[in-house]
Image (cartoon, rainbow, N blue to C red):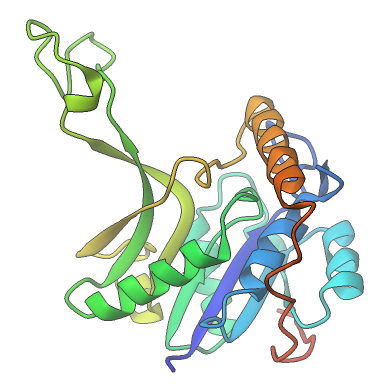
Length: 245
């Protein structure tokens, strides 16, 4: 099996949703959901959290001792630092053949979807040099000048018959370090778009997103409450190791 490391950056500070990465959602801190998802993905060898947050560091040491930690250095903590720069730093700390990056703000992502994305990319590599997840949109879109982008306003066809367009949803990125360094970007020159079901693709960016994800998660939990869990947390990850700058 190819060596794959999952990277999950988690800042302490959040501009639009205060403390969102460790804020409770449907009964537990938000960051727990993505770590539980990644631990249930057998293709992932190592899970690494990059953070400057003491509540997150303490929570991971207590609840996820198999997850590695990178203490984000001061020069990468400002709001205007690109995620690509953080990933360049993190991939220098953790050696792997491939890297998967996701966020704690994607709590509805399912393990089976992550596995499917990984295998889709591996089968397509190196013809495609990277993968990013998208959400299908079939709606009438306009630019800021009121010009139609994906339809003819004079032809009022049903939206389900419009040619689809795709939104980058920030749920999944797959790439190699060489590609990341070559373009200083996690999306390469020949990327593969990977469609994710809309009910998994929510990325929490605003308070409304948080409320919607909490509603959907509570509904999911209720539907599963009478069922026996189908998987347990993996225990074969490398032991906790703080990777300090």
